[in-house]
Length: 150
Image (cartoon, rainbow, N blue to C red; front, top):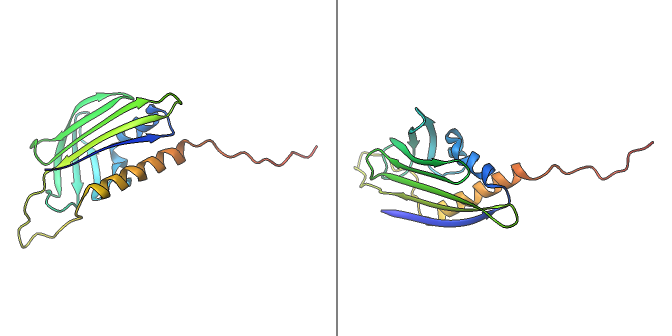
């Protein structure tokens, strides 16, 4: 099993970070190899991926959802994929995000197309991409500093 544990500081409140993870339809915007995630119910999600060694479609269930604090999910087969996102507010109003993603690649058959090979570096880069997306959306609009003519 491959597993990545990463902690990142994000200059946005936990509610903003949680909202981005909780919007499963947008997970493909920052996770490599994920084509789409569709919430079928409040607890069940259908993932479409292009990741080497993982079935192109699998189902996952949400095991824990604590708004602004934690998301925990696992694939229905309890082998393919697991995810955990823990959020903690920092002293300066930002978020300390701890993510654990793990997946179990299976050997590909010779006739199967290879998908994206995931490794720790790819996932860490994905999480940095997420950080940039959240921080750019959360940054206050820059005001024009030119004085207004009377």
